[in-house]
Every structure is written in structure tokens, then in C-alpha cells.
Length: 160
Image (cartoon, rainbow, N blue to C red; front, side, top):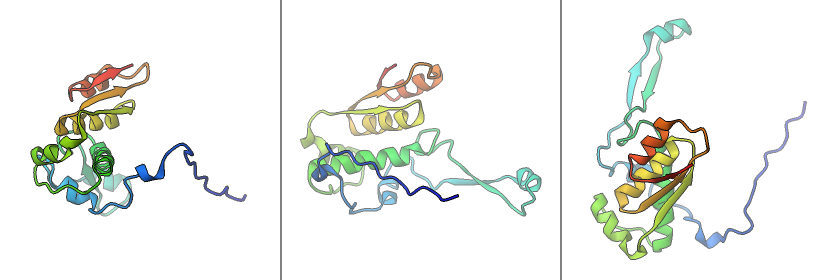
């Protein structure tokens, strides 16, 4: 059976000059400046390794990534940062989030918005909180109350 060719969907209404473009810095350079940054811990899982017939199995522990219980902060933070850099028009010079907030101050008050059923929205809300912006996160009906509470704990307005 022949495999279908990949499909690329393009939003014709999006202005290409709004794209963050090719980043000047790697995502790791951003993430290492986050409060509480530490390399992801690897945890050996010998029982699972034996069950799977493997000599060794290690699992990344993403239960406390940059203050959140998932890896989603990595993509959300990079996307938010690149979008704000694009709006600012240049790569800011900063070492701390207080300095980054000052660099982004000319952008004025902003609200970061996301639609999610959990960790991505919490990550966007976390970034908004770190940068001094508001966040509004839309979640589908039926989202677990614990997820809604987690998003809200980051200071976001949650709309079901």
C-alpha cells in the first residue's frame, strides 16, 4: 500500500513578517536562565527493563520541569519568547526574568491566550506570570477540575 504524501497546511491570512523567524539563540540558552533550571533527572527503571528484556532503561523525570509538573513549559516558553522578540523587533539582552520583563515593557500590557486541556495552558500561564502579563486559557467542557485549578494557580483566567 502506498503511503500518502505529507500535507502542509498554511494559514493564508497570516502575515509572514509576523513570524519569529529563525531564532538567534537556541532554546537551551533561554531555558537555562529560568528560575530553578536544572538538567532533567534520569531515573533508572530496572524492573521495567527486566520485564522488557533490556539491559538498562532510564526514564526522564519531567515531574518538576522549571516549576511545573510536565515538559510542556519548554515549547510554550520558547514560542512565547520568540513571539515577543518578534514584536519587540530585536533580541533583548537579559540575565534574569526581571531584566527580561523590563526589555519587553515597551510592548505594553499583553494577555497571552491558549486553548488546551491541561499542561500546555498551564505552561503558557506560567510564562505570562513570569513576564508580568495576563493569561486567558480556554479549556474544553469536561476538563478535569484539577487541571483547571492547576492552570488557575498560575494566575490565569480559565474559561470553559
